[in-house]
Image (cartoon, rainbow, N blue to C red):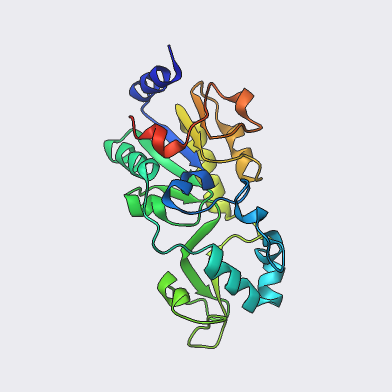
Length: 237
């Protein structure tokens, strides 16, 4: 059987599918990824993006952080693509039980997915570092310079920056979902970012599907490898 037939057969057979995705899931929505040739990490700025997107840089250079953040991280016009839509459909039908994402754009929820583990947080949540009050994405977009709360505190996006730890509850929920899955679909990720990529080791089933345009370090561990854009591929099922 060819890989499309195998994938379709496994979809039909599975009752607890879990999806684990990265930046490549959202590139078909017009959001650039980080590590491809044209990705954010290969563009030139006054500081390297890895430096700008670090906790210490946010604390010491908030003006420069938010200049980059508004310009390169927030995409308010982005809409879900077929990958987001299909996953939401599968969840609604009861076949897919969880989406685990490294993305912070909120497009899975916008497409209708409800059980989403956001490993790296979300641009849609922003909190005051002084009083803890939460603010919307619109609040950040409609301010200039460093956004501040009514109390005067700096507002920080609820995203995981370099030098920060992942949320323990999100990690535990993701591990449990992966461990219980009878089919694990990994899509649109280079699998180079840890600790997120290490979560795959908790899968114990025999239907590990890896969908990515380019090869990854975990291709040899997968039961089925598909080198296609994920939205275009999933739209056929």
